Image 1 (cartoon, rainbow, N blue to C red):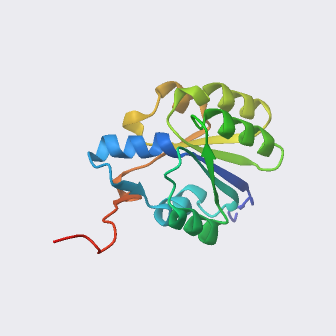
Image 2: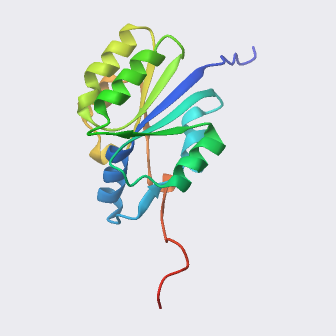
Length: 164
């Protein structure tokens, strides 16, 4: 019997501040950044990407980063007034009827109720986070857990305009 491939539509919603903080904590380097070109294909595993939204608190969002997300994944960056929790939860709820799977990139326990709500709506919910900093209750509630490892980030060296 041949393998049956189901074409799933996936939305990836990233709590940028949570993921950045987790990577900085684990790597010990505050210049460590997610390598989306490495991570996104791994998360999708052949499934179709409906949309990628990166929620980030604060105004220091790199224009170049936003452009790359858009060019490579038709992704968008959403600046948040405070935490990403509420905007990400609203967007996930809006997308629930439009996608098969929502991958939440965050280890924040604040998303436990969102995960159980989405699952009750018939959406598969996956969490992508760094295991060491992710809330166990969140991982337990999700349908699947993708561990983000040091293979999935890089150290940003900046431009070559540094003073010697």
